[in-house]
Image (tube, rainbow, N blue to C red; front, side, top):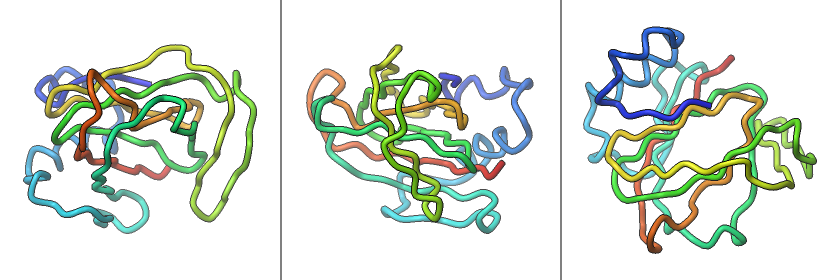
Length: 150
């Protein structure tokens, strides 16, 4: 997993072209104007989901991971905390192949606070993440989740 901010995108030359394409897309499109939903950029190879939801207590959320996609979580408005761990250190509860959704059980290794517009967290298939956790106080957030097919 990699934590950063879009304003430093030129410093991330080591990332793949597909991941850097997320940064380019975010800079060239006004994501604040996007409604909640899924937007195809390159079919199912590369798309972005726009989400709006209220942050909640940690114990009200679930762990997830994905086998076929890299997630790039990027904050648009509000503040969110995301717990992170490694899938190898967790127990698989279920796997929905059609949704590429692995639900896991376990404990966090760390957490990341996405508190500024453009803050992002890149989650690879080995990275478990638990999103939508209160950061400071419960609030409704808006974020982009770029999905990059491996």
